[in-house]
Length: 275
Image 1 (cartoon, helix red, strand yellow):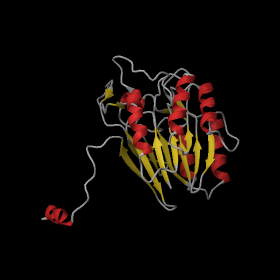
Image 2 (tube, rainbow, N blue to C red):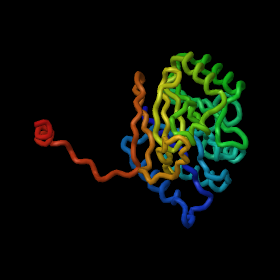
Image 3 (cartoon, rainbow, N blue to C red):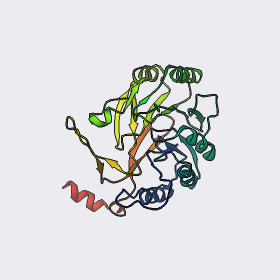
Image 4 (spheres, one colour):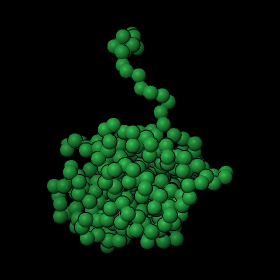
């Protein structure tokens, strides 16, 4: 099974560029053109939050059109930029509602080879995230009820410190320790998928991979100076492709734009490179 893990689209309400700002519309056009051209096509698309930039209904309608162009099932979780009411309507637009009883904006979706559990980590009045005991109780019970079902967990806010101070202040600040214990207690969890940091990151969390997908809209600088403020980074946009063969999950970092077409290997060139 092939899964496209994308994040932080920050879809504007308007298709018009904003003078002096990052041209998010152009970036998203390039990104979805690249995603649609993938061969083989992904079987599933997971969006790990910040679908819209300002939570406006028009932005979610535009995002739904982009995602429907993939002609694949979509699982989406909310980010700190997402408006809860508008995001719930967006889930209905893309057919992303939970197939089992779930807390608000959370979901359980079953596919051919695996299950995806989506969590809602928004906290009011802050860009940081959290998971309360009720949501974590539900997650634990959901995993307990299907111990043989390979499962991905999607949550917007990364539940670990990454060393970038301004991002660490707005990570998953509530419920991370208990989430890690739950992940560790359920062997069927293949990985935890996150967004929010606008950079690719990987670590172990509860003994499982935790993959952060970069943003399709714009990057954030790798500023690890104590007290560093960071900023927007003109780095190549990218996403993750997850390959699951029933035994092993492998994450590939794929770039929206390449430096050129791939050249076929030639045995003579390979032999010359080794000489």
